Image (cartoon, rainbow, N blue to C red; front, side, top):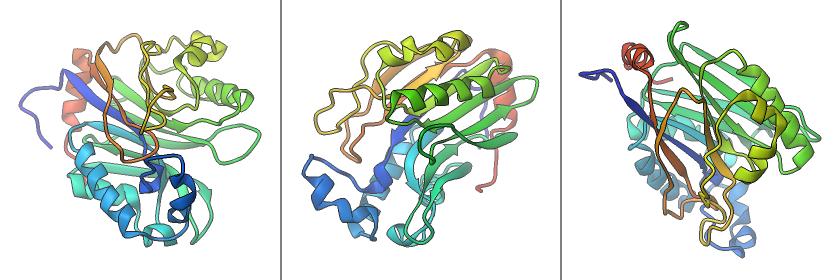
Length: 267
C-alpha cells in the first residue's frame, strides 16, 4: 500500500468474531452450538460478511478466531479474511490448541507491516489467555498494538492486565484492544491500568449481546499521546458481540514512520 501523504490518523477495530458462528439470540447458543466443533456453510457465509466489514479499517484485532481446524475446514480464518479484504499483513496467536477440533486464538490484520511481533501467555486460574503485541513504524517512532481476550474472573483479569501493562511499560504510543469481559468502570478501577496511564474510553459502548446490547465489554485503550477523534459500536449481527471502532490521531513523526512501512507482503 502507498500513500501520497503520511497518515494523520488510524481507523482501528476490535471484534470478538465468535469463530463466525453468528449467534443472534440466546437460544442459538444451544441450537447453533454445534458450529463451534463442525464446519458449516453458515459460518463461511458469515466470514464473507465479516471480511466486508473489516475493509474500512487500518488495524484490526480479532478475538475468538480459528487458525485452521475441522470446524473451519482447516482454513486459517485470519489469513482468509486478510486476503479477502486486501490487507497487507496478518498474524495469528493460538492460545488453545485442540488439534483438529479447534485452533482457538487471537488475530491481527493490518495495512502496515510491523517490525516486531511477540506472543505472550497471560497468567490466570485457567490457561488459554494471551496477548499478541505488534510494533509498527520504527524503533525510534513506534506504535505498539496489543490484541487480547481477558478472563471472565476478576482475579485472573487483574493479573492479566498487570502483565500487559508490564509488557508495554516502556512504550510511548500504545493501543490495547480486545474483549476484556468487563466494563469501562471495572477497567478504570484496575490499579495496574491506572498506573500505566492508558486511557479508557468512558462513554458506554454497548457491545454484548449483539442482538440487544447492554454491556460494554469490548474496549480500545489508548496512551495519552494518541487523541481519540471518534469512537463507536458498529450495528451488525455477525457474532454475539458487536465490533467497536475508533479513529485515533497520530503524532507526525509516527505517521511518517508508518508511511515508510505501508507496503507489506501478506503473511
